[in-house]
Image 1 (cartoon, rainbow, N blue to C red):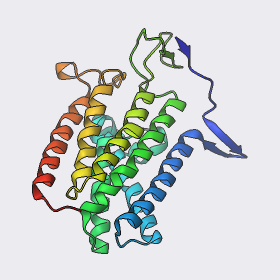
Image 2 (tube, rainbow, N blue to C red):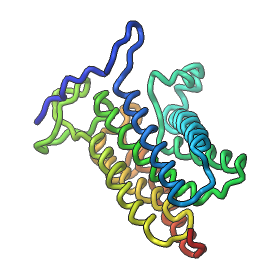
Image 3 (cartoon, rainbow, N blue to C red):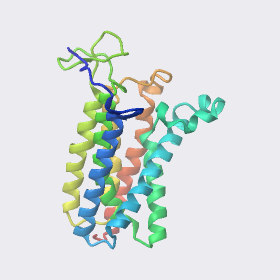
Image 4 (spheres, rainbow, N blue to C red):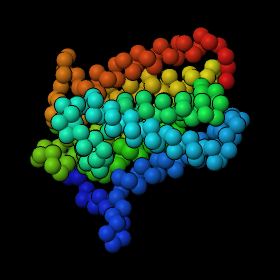
Length: 261
């Protein structure tokens, strides 16, 4: 059993301005994503300048924030936000949904590609690989914030989190950081090396993420206001099931198209 390390959530205090580790983690994810997208764009010959890549990342960030927040509002606490609609825009209070964020990014990228008259598939394959950086750093930020902890456990690496009671819990944030970061990126990189049709990497990302999220949810503490739902599964697992089916169906569809990118 380990006690949670005392990490000050504020990395740097400049007068009234507090720079938090959580924000720095997201910044690191976006910076890594930007340089990776630039690298892959040059490697694949897509007609995108450095400025266009920056614009694309801006679209993606807006899609993540808007979709993630609206997804949380609709999937997790619709009743609460219906009674308190002003809180929907209070992002500093927390509350984001990956599934909603993914939908937001998809719509944002479709809009970007339409404005630039770009083919979506090859760019989507690059973006999901870049997303692994943001997912990994984001989960590390969750760990530093001592939030979204795991279920009670007796494993030797169990951690006693502040505000989570005296019992050790799974560090599920780190499980997700590893699976959604280096593991998922490595799998997608292997697929990207093959001569495969466009969209194959994108739908592989959808399927693998859904599988990893479904498995990690067995170790992650369910949301207190929801608990476990039908079949003893969490809401995250129920949302991941159709995502997994969509990903698998998309991989089959992309491979059957047979147009190598």
